[in-house]
Structure formats: structure tokens, C-alpha cells
Length: 135
Image 1 (cartoon, rainbow, N blue to C red):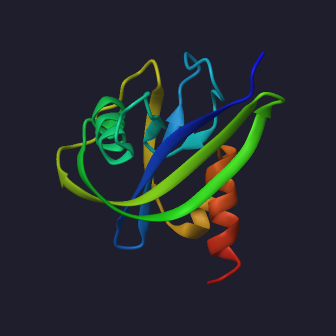
Image 2: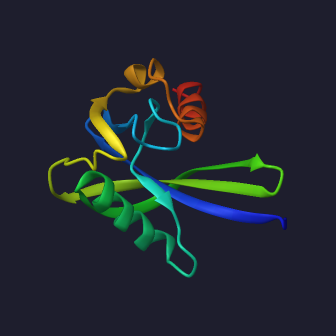
């Protein structure tokens, strides 16, 4: 099998001192029962910003404006697959959270301290650790 790279994009919305996080559904085949932010894989030839807008709408029902990158996470998910996850700052344009139950079963608006106690997907935990140590 050849080596390859995969790119995923995620978004972080902040409202006051709270951040939107989504709980990965038991029906989700990847990392169920972990907390995450809206996002997912960039399809071949897709613009990452457009991919994030699409993923936000599919996963949360929210329309967002994508801002600056906040964090890049890189790891080998298996010996051939190099995964990049890019976390972007996002601004809510419209909508109310409406989850896709096959992907996420609940959501929370949490403070940074509350985020620290959640069981988070690896890139979100790494991002949290980087900002928690700098506050």
C-alpha cells in the first residue's frame, strides 16, 4: 500500500467565553463517545474553507464564516496514512444547532475550564492543552 495524506478541517465557534463542542454518537464509526468540533475530511479537489462550511451545515445545521487557522495537528493514523487536522476560528452567521444523529448525539457550549474535563478527540485535546498552558 502506498503512503498518502488526508486533510480534515474543523471549526471552533466562541460565544462570549463558551465554545461549541459536539459529542460523537455511539452510531459514529470513528471515535464514538468523544467530544469534537464540527468538521471533517476535505474531499479531493475541494477548497478547505468550502469543506468546513459544508461540514458545519451537515453536522450542526449552522452556517458559518470561516476565519483564520488556529491550530494544526499532524499524526500518523496508520503506517501509510499521514493525517492533518486544521482547526479554524469560525463565526456563526445563522441557524440553531440541529445535529445529525448518526454523527453526533448532543452538544454543549462550554468554557475553557469545562472543556478541559471532557473526553476529547486527540486534535481538540492537543489544542486545549496548547491554550490552557498559555492562559
